[in-house]
Length: 95
Picture 1 (cartoon, helix red, strand yellow):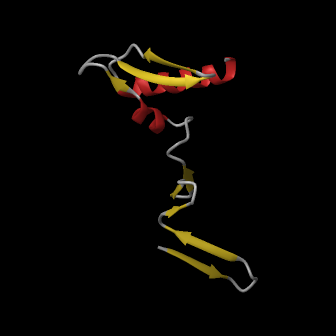
Picture 2 (cartoon, rainbow, N blue to C red):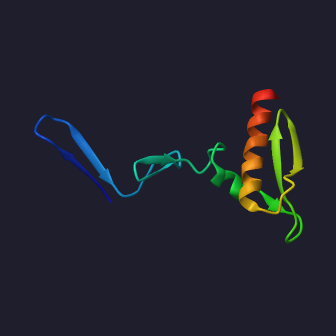
Picture 3 (tube, rainbow, N blue to C red):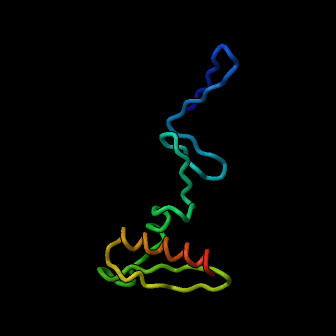
């Protein structure tokens, strides 16, 4: 649901519970959330995997023409997602 209202001064306001842009970003609670944003933990939460149940989490990252799998050295998913994000950001900055 989306509605547009105008006050008497010609200023338009838009109210929305949930808007989605053509780029796939979603407006939730006044914040723009892009599910493909690699700076968010939710992106990495979906990108990590376990090679065997109960084992450490792994991530596959491609940068500079190389694709590598890295062990994140933890069985805790939240900590692994943070390490994956940090590893990717380090690769982007330092090469």
